[in-house]
Length: 81
Picture: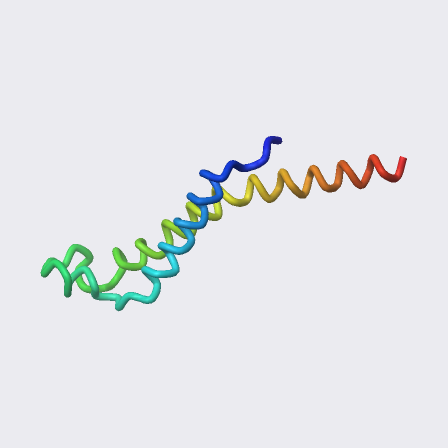
């Protein structure tokens, strides 16, 4: 498995940071900023702004991590032989 590029790592970092930063917002920031209430005031849309970037960042990061773990295990197995 090939290693992750700098672009992929930057994308992962941006997604995770965006999710964390949106997490610090109040649960009604869309209503306050834009004067509309797309989710009926329950905060579900604001919660999606937190969850989606974090899940996307993890979805990009996990295959790279698993590839590195697999590569490390393979190298350790070669050393034992």
